[in-house]
Length: 183
Ligand SMILES: Cc1cc2nc3c(=O)[nH]c(=O)nc-3n(C[C@H](O)[C@H](O)[C@H](O)COP(=O)(O)O)c2cc1C
Image (tube, rainbow, N blue to C red):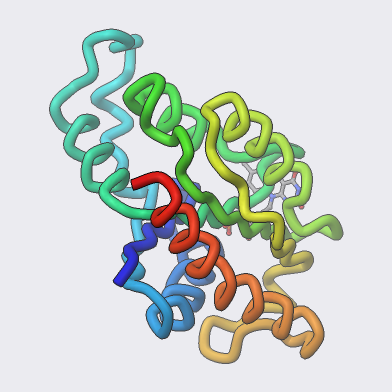
């Protein structure tokens, strides 16, 4: 069975990103082995002062656990019209160049505002393209997340819930097809 690691892409305690990660993991587990990671556990204080080229053991350990998967699902909140800075820190300390190269990546954006994290996701996609990841084209943007998402029942909109289910059902197929192609 393929393994998909989900990243709740913020270190904010009590984030909706982590709630959504838990909800989508339940669904993904029907098709794959899904594991949740959160940037709340990222050893951020260990990279203070700039440890580039001298990655601390704690970060190497986080990276190797996170990278041990066939595919990745990033759940990304919008902070100041972009993705959280701690997500960029994670990427800046991933092994270069191979960490995300040819790795299938799926994306979910979410925000309390009206655009559902589309800016955050699309800006992060630029980085994923630079790191040569394979981006799954079906994406979900959860707008007004505090009103439209419930950790037990999912999205209040039936139409959007169907699209989310489709994304989660089809991403493992995408991962599997790429895994077969490049072994
Ligand atoms: C530092 C910060 C910046 C934010 N900037 C935006 C923003 O630009 N647009 C927006 O719609 N919501 C913004 N929000 C609100 C988040 O969308 C809201 O907290 C939502 O629950 C998703 O974030 P979460 O996963 O941390 O809960 C911001 C929140 C924080 C903490």
